[in-house]
Amino acid sequence: MAEFQINRLGHQGDGIADGPLFAPLTLPGETVSGEVDGTQLRDIRVVTPSDDRVKPPCRHFKACGGCGLQHASDTFVADWKVDVVRHALAAQGIVTEFRPIETSPVAARRRASISARRTKKGAMAGFHQRASDVIVEIPDCQVLHPDLKPALDVAKQLAVIGASRKGELSVTATLAPEGLDISVAGGKPLDGPFQSQLAQEAQKMGLARLTWDDEVIATCFPPWQPMGKAKVTPPPGAFLQATAHGEEALLRAALEIVGDASKVVDLFAGCGTFSLPLAEKAEVHAVEGIRSMMKALDQGWRQAQGLKRVTTETRDLFRNPILAQDLRYDAVVIDPPRAGAEAQCIELAKSKVPTIAFVSCNPVTFARDAATLIRGDYKLHWVQVVDQFRWSPHIEMVGKFTRV
Ligand SMILES: C[S@@+](CC[C@H](N)C(=O)[O-])C[C@H]1O[C@@H](n2cnc3c(N)ncnc32)[C@H](O)[C@@H]1O
Image 1 (cartoon, rainbow, N blue to C red):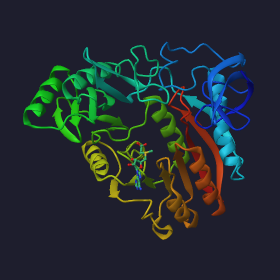
Image 2 (cartoon, rainbow, N blue to C red; image 1 turned 90 degrees about the horizontal axis):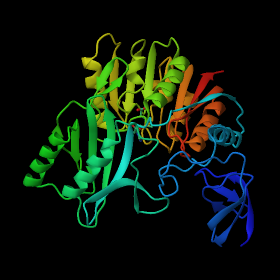
Image 3 (spheres, helix red, strand yellow; image 1 turned 45 degrees about the horizontal axis):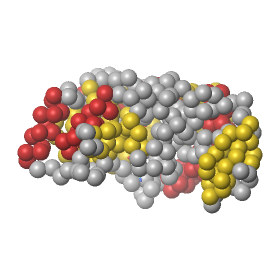
Image 4 (spheres, rainbow, N blue to C red; image 1 turned 30 degrees about the vertical axis):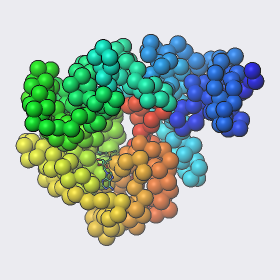
């Protein structure tokens, strides 16, 4: 079999040899053998391992597609994640300082998308196998928070009663202080008797909330999440930072950047991860595309004590960004989805806002939007990389921008 030298890791965490040829689960500097299949190497064997290669800590790693980088040392992964952001910025001609990466601990994930289906003997639940729709059971998963793991059994029980014969349930499980908040898609259609059966199951299993195809079936305990001094009940399945540690690291950086600003706008605000803690010191205007998230944030704020004023606005910031002349704030926190915030950054670049805390989950769109801000005379002072998706190629970051 031919041998190949792995030169680098791609954005998805696969090793890349000349070609380019993609070789999953390999590391730069390794010599591997394998069969070429288009742009993929198959039947890969590592001939000369890298010094950064380690024994994967999870026994499910080989089969499970949930983690892609357990074969690399923690130091390697940390350096690689920072380098991905550094290179994305360099491709836009941007050089900046990097703070030491913040990596979430093992077993910290408080939210997961679990797949489940019926089997001849009952049901199975877990993550998909790498590049496949086969489900792998993961009882000893190293990333899930111990209190989230019971969601695997919940998913199985729901598949037994609610999955169609061949279909797969997609179960979003979120750990709330009072129990599991479970939202299911892809199951049997709801009718009266099935709805009452699900409600009884939710009670038996002690779930905080069960939602089926966007319909709330039962709320046995309030599925609130702490956001600063507020308790927010997010809409079912709503976005939430993946680990409490990651959220704290992103928030700490954003609060430091915003400093003593007294009027802040939080763009792509979600349910208030940043707005509500910011409101301990500043008046905040929160803007977000999903109305139910704005409603949840508003209710959380109204029930909390000792916060400054928070106003909310449901708005599509891609099609209808806030115009430069309306950005009359001391600071902006912006946390767009993976697509970034192209239209909004064009307006920010023309604005007079002194300070921007830019939170992102995509190095490429972050670098593109950073270049727009820099062309508008902002300076990028530093970047804090946050790794809350441990062992996956996912990367989060916060950048501090001020007007020159
Ligand atoms: C990465 S999440 C951040 C949410 C929040 N800042 C947090 O940390 O929990 C991005 C948010 O942008 C919202 N969003 C996506 N597209 C949008 C758009 N076109 N206009 C406004 N908000 C949008 C999503 O609903 C989501 O809440």
